[in-house]
Length: 117
Image (cartoon, rainbow, N blue to C red; front, side, top):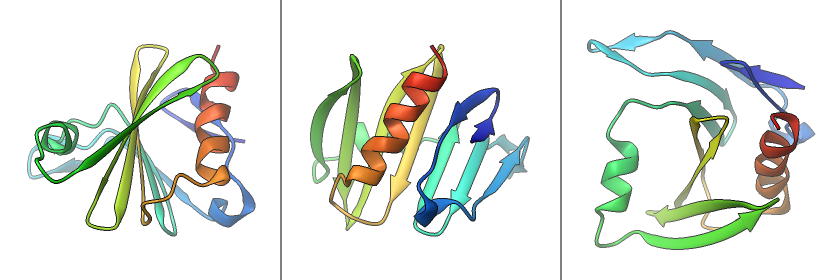
């Protein structure tokens, strides 16, 4: 079990060797709270323009999933995917290097929803 900013989640073994970071300020901007593993970055309440840039992109593809009753927006652009969803009034951003929404990615999202009811 992992935890970022008070939100619990599970990661498959593939992503288990990650690092949790909180309260980082880069160029005067709070980067939120994150978990970074090989090929996976999860951020809680990201304050960068990443989400806005994806939503306004003419070239990003978008898929909408429903996992455990929660709507998940997944954007793919330049060989990377970003899932956006909300848990307990916190914005969760997950990024990985693939255009595929794998069972592991779905399991992580599902665990956020299940563990933080």
